Structure formats: C-alpha cells, structure tokens
Length: 60
Image (cartoon, rainbow, N blue to C red; front, side, top):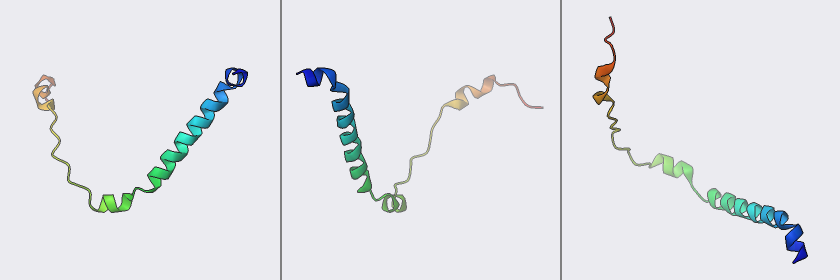
C-alpha cells in the first residue's frame, strides 16, 4: 500500500498512456478517404438571423 500511496501519479500516467495508445490504434482503422468519397449530404443550414436583421441600419 505504501507504493500506491507514494507513486499513484505514475499509475495514473501509465493508465493515460494506455488509453491514448488504444485510441490511436482504433483511429488507424477508420478509412477516412472512403468516408470522404461517400459522405452524406448535409441538410440546408437554417439560422434565424433574418429575424434580427431588421435592426441594422440600411447601407447608403
């Protein structure tokens, strides 16, 4: 228990390195070029700025 009490931060770093290695390995399996070639179309963007555009002064 003394080891864990004094060196808990080393165990946390090892855990973090292990998580990052697994993330890296899993991201290597993603085929981004294939996805970009067949990516779905996005729906049209609807912002509601037209409701507030009347407040601006008209350009001369």
